Amino acid sequence: MFELFDNNPYNNTDTSVFALVFVLVIAIILIALFFRFVPVGLWITAYFSGAKVSIGNLVGMRLRRVTPTDIVNPLIKATKAGITINTDQLEAHYLAGGNVNLVVDALIAAQRANIDLEFEQAAAIDLAGRDVFEAVQVSVNPKVIETPIVAAVAMNGIEIKAKAKVTVRANIERLVGGAGEETIIARVGEGIVTTVGSSKYHSDVLENPDSISQTILRKGLDSGTAFEILSIDIADIDVGRNIGAKLQADQAMADKKIAQAKAEERRAFAVAQEQEMVAEVQKMRAKVVEAEAEVPLAMAEAFRKGNLGVMDYYKMQNVQSDTAMRDSIARENPTDNETGE
Image 1 (cartoon, helix red, strand yellow):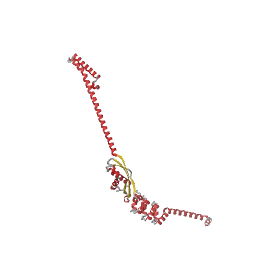
Image 2 (cartoon, helix red, strand yellow):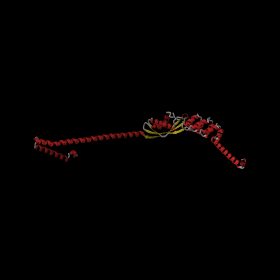
Image 3 (spheres, helix red, strand yellow):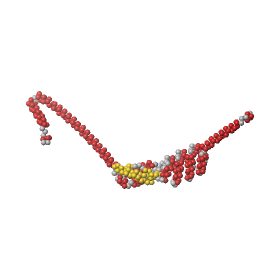
Image 4 (cartoon, one colour):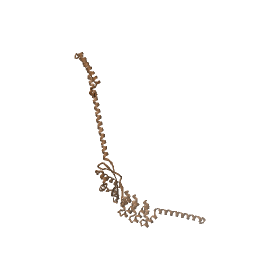
């Protein structure tokens, strides 16, 4: 048996090569897995930056489905800025859906501006949907909010159009739960309408536009908002339409239409009454015709009873003929008064 084995010198060599390749493949896989789960380069960067991050912590981030760079890089920035913060806080904010890098930038900016801002407060602002870094910037560098053109009418009916610029500063304490820019714009518009509407003449507002700013500031319109109003400046003011005259004209037109409707109602009533009178006249004429139709019957009855003679009848006929002739002559020859002669 040993002789047979010795007669195949290539078997030992092949087996050794195969074993070496197998070991190398396993080693490469293990090394790849190690560098996959253990970001050594990131750990080295953090170590020389002074950030306290262990290899086990980095592996735990991988297992918790947290991207290590999104935690370690902000931690390095915070450490270099002198802000005390740990990876647990950053991971908790990351897992809650917050922007870790933005929160750290806000903390650094607040520290440089001597603004008291804690990590928990900054994280709450970020999770509330507000840009915490922009809020810190606005707190340091006030922001100007320009309102749209607001139209208001003075007591004399003249329209005033005004546009204001509001300088505000972010209030860190009220960023969570405080109203935004839309509320500021709406309240400033309300103040403009109130000031102009309470003015007796529109010229009073044109002469003293600062009265609008004073009225708005006295009302404390920044209460309950995430901002503090520093100043309100009237950027533009102009005279609009004569609303009072237009309303009076519209009212006069409406009164005219009402009067026309009432006149038409009276006319229709008069026409209906006239038609009723015409019908009544026709009714009376019918009665007259009916009465005249009974005259020959009465005369015939008088002849039969002897109450009317033949001569009386002829005299009556002559009178009727004479009356008819006179009427005919009167129609053909009008009087002097009628002709104007």
